[in-house]
Every structure is written in structure tokens, then in C-alpha cells.
Length: 257
Image (cartoon, rainbow, N blue to C red; front, top):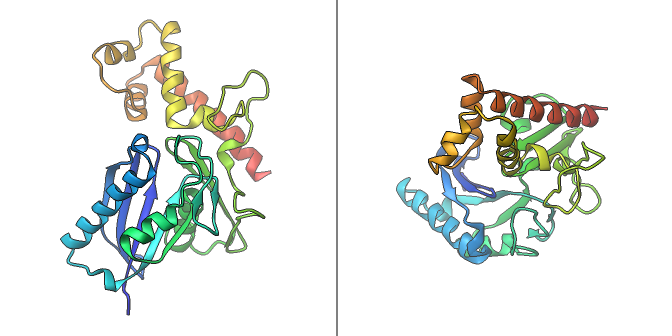
């Protein structure tokens, strides 16, 4: 029996890989592989596959013992073909056949789905939502993803793009421009890139913020730095996180209703 499954979480900044048993037990993982969107999909997939092969060798697992590969990717996607469509945070990757690229390299069966759908399914299968039949899952990263499970099934919709919850409109007038082309999307306020942009814009109004010193020292700003400084009482960081929480709350209330 093929006992192992390979999981890939393709992110706009980092890609995560894992090897797990059919029971769901994680055997090994690498959570810090730079995706390097700018080098293009073919080369980026080669890097991902190389890391998978290294992890397999380290764990002394043969590919003949692997059932297949499950991939969570930002959307929108062509689920049936395993193809990326026009991803807001992946310039130059439009219409890339991710399923074929991975399958040709690894010589394994590959299934591609929206990353938030995969996260929702993971929570439904092995996580905090075991036993429930209906759930909404939000993933917060470079962008904002969403997955919906209704009556125990992933909601894909007619064309596989249902559940793009990061692109619900939360600001209807003079909203921030989203990478999808619309204005006022949740992702334009609560995605990592948007949070960092908003932080830098606020520096003009918060002269005493510790972020001035951090940026002047050429330290890359991250949500973790913003969070840590908010805990330490930095007014800019606290206000920024409160605003972000309010935007998320508006969106979640709309999903529920």
C-alpha cells in the first residue's frame, strides 16, 4: 500500500511542503522555501520539487510509496485542469499548468485546489472543525483566501472559483486598489502587502512610532514586527491592527449573514 502523501502550500512569499501518512500524521516538513515568483513558474516549480526530493531522501522514503501530491494554491484556478488563471500576486504566472509542471517533475499524481479550500478541508478532516458539516475558513497571508464547506463538501461553484472571500468589497467609496483590479476588497486591507503599505502610509501622522527607526535601519518590515510593537504600546501599530480587525469583522459578518 502507498502509505505517504505529499502536501504543498504555494504562497506568494513562501512555499511550504510536507510529507504525511494517509492517517494525517505529519512525518516531515519544510515551511520556509522562498517562492521567488519573479523567476517564473517553471523555475520556481523546479526549486519546489528539488526541496521535496531532498526531504524524501532525508526521511528515506521512496517515491513508489507515495500515493500522490496535494497542492493548495492561491486562486483563481481552473480546478479540473490544475491550471492557474490570473493570480493577483503572481505576475507572469497567468494560465500556468501547475498540475502538469509538478506531475512531470515528480512522476506522481497531482491534485490542485485553492489554498483556502485545502485549509478548510484540513480543518474539517483533522483540525478544529472535525464533526461539523459547514464551515468558513479564511487564510491570511500575502493575500486573503477563503474556503467554504457546505454539508461536508468543498464549495467550488460552477467554474471552480467560488469562495474567493478575500475579494468581497468592504469599502465602497474611495477604496484601496486591489491587485485583482477592483477597489475596496478585503485583501487590499488585510493581506500582508496591504498591511505593510498602510503602516508606511501612517508614518506621516505618527511621528513617535518606533517604526521610523526600524525602517531607517533598513530592517524589512513584517506583520510580526508590527504586532510586537503594538503589544509594546506603539500607537501606530495598535491603531493599524485595530483597523485591520475591524475590516475582517465586517467581512466575516457578511459571510455569516
